Amino acid sequence: MSNRFLTAAAVSALVLAAAAPVVASAQVLNMDMSWAIQSQMQNQAYAQAAAQAAAMNYLRYMQQLRAMGYTGPSLPTGVTPESLRQSINGMNEAWSSYNRAQSVNSQRLSNSVNNYVMQGIRGCSLVNYYGRPTYVCP
Image (tube, rainbow, N blue to C red; front, side, top):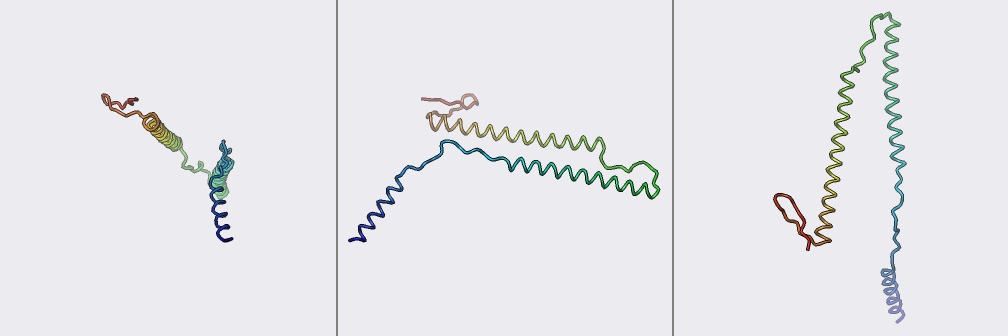
């Protein structure tokens, strides 16, 4: 008899625990973006160090050539106004493409949320008048 009592007590405790309200936070916690800032700073420092190392290698090479008696003009570095212009144009095109993609994704999200609100919540139907989709609400 005591086993039945314990089993009934355990079952009732489980039912009460399942029915107890769950405490939920009403506000989302602050988003910690310090990792992104640190990553950006590390990437900038790496790029700066790489550029400085390349410049120093070129300078040392030219100094060695001068020490061996080379009196001609400095050797070309491969960086020309045209190569800089191409690099800048490529960067601008990449950013434009990225911004276009974000705009399209934002529009898709807005359309899907608007459609859910209009059809799912308000009960409107989507009809096509003269090639333009229009909502007809009751």
